[in-house]
Image 1: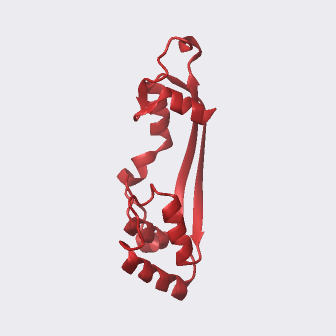
Image 2: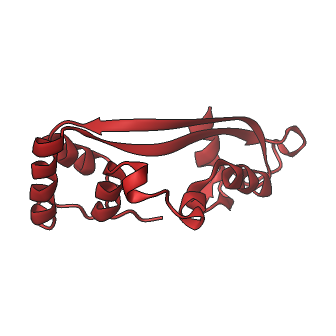
Image 3: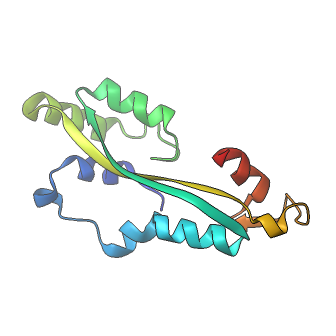
Length: 140
């Protein structure tokens, strides 16, 4: 799921104010789906770890820094493009204090199945376009 700046700002509100995200949005990246993808790609899942994390922003500079470094959160983010929304968010932080954004993270450790070692093409596509070699290097 591609997130927008508005999604980030909406997450800054409390659950009671913004409401929980719809099921189809929450299932956009789910650990069970990642495990199924790894298995379908011929990998053996060794471990799965999940964590729900909260990032708290105390000023607008931290928001801008975060969005520039974590480029997949708001693809194409620029201060110029979001200047008005950034000003609104700055004023909100000044008025109400820091806000938190929640995210779910997971790590899948997977490897080639023992009976497949040495017989597979390490560049075959499997996990949503990632090669098996990339995945095994990531989880090593």
